[in-house]
Length: 202
Image (cartoon, rainbow, N blue to C red; front, side):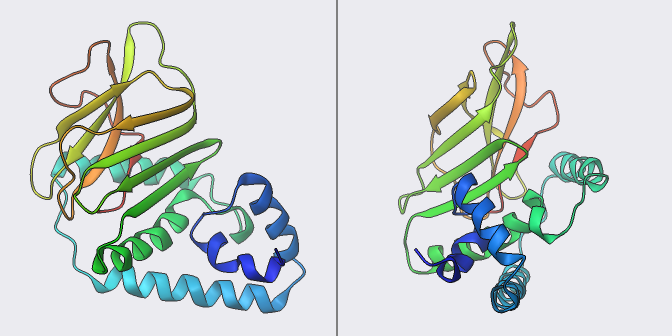
């Protein structure tokens, strides 16, 4: 496929690591693709901020702000964007997909870890995690569904490792987020640590 045709997929973080790296090399030499990518990012930002999202629970808001502060020291130029900028574009794409009743895929990546949340039309969901180290002895990873303005609801446990597919318990309501924390073995009824993954509102 011609590198010029990959701009939209790159903006949505839909390329494999090898494809993204090759496209970034092309992007550094192609003014046309840089301009097109900037337009896509601006459009995604406008769409994402055009909808009013409910306020998150205070505990979740604090966790997100803490995570954003921790990431600030690692900010790098456009060609190596962090998950926040890509998550914004994907959130906008998710809004469009929901509007036409299709399944929605929300992806975030941080360093070598990748999280992809697929929400089906019936609001059941699957979380695909790759590159997450296995949970240490006595610990597990726990997924949570957090409806707008409500407390987190346990949605499943997983051990981590090279690749994990977790079918979340129950459904993911509109405007809810999905989060992942590290918990004691057997899981917890409520999160005991700050989430290291939080999806855009579904």
